[in-house]
Length: 308
Image 1 (cartoon, rainbow, N blue to C red):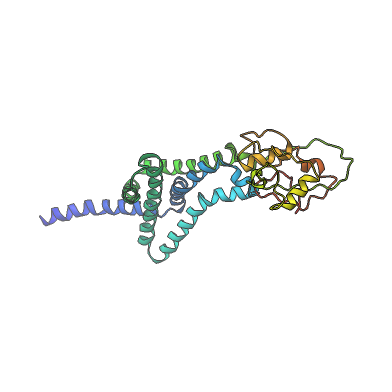
Image 2 (cartoon, one colour; image 1 turned 135 degrees about the vertical axis):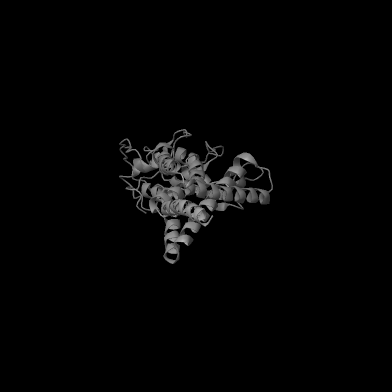
């Protein structure tokens, strides 16, 4: 019995040790772990933001974001957090390889939980109690971490997941930066304005007040209340006032470019100089000083003209 037991131990012991070392070796491959962290960061944080901002590129345009700013933002919600998490894992590995492996699985489960929470809130249980959604997300994240730990033993699945992870991150980045409407900011067109000769050198002042209804200035007779607003009344008296003028759009990023270039707003156009090349700025830019131009929600004035 003792010989049989020894033979059994000699057969199973190396086999179990081999499987353990194989799994340990897999979980200690930084590039593979980085790919898995990156794809989960992308699904948990990057893609929800990409989906939102690709439909609202005015978010970047109104802030004057340059192409490099958008590229950095995209990396900050995909690969950079993954690199930071991997760095934390490597620091833990200085103390213990086991701690590094456990921390990696914890990160995987946590990121998966965030992703599941996003899916539950937006697509599945939109009206469910928040506490219940958190519990479900944590449970699903824990299950994902356990499954990840188990599947790490299969070489075929390991390779497939690594390839899919890298491909998914690349796909979301390319789609957001170069295919969505944001591409008009990352790959702007070189639009040129029509040349216009300006003979008069009269001073021009343009002041736009967003969300300031004309009715707030009027009295019961439909005229500017001179007692409450004497300066507006004096301006209207000494100039041409259009009391029934109104904006062509209810959004600032659409209405103001229409004022500046005199064209009906296009739903796909952005409040940038590239999409509005023929504006008052380009018409007067060569003859007037535009260093004091300040656009709070638009960027219609070309940077080479508006240096202020």
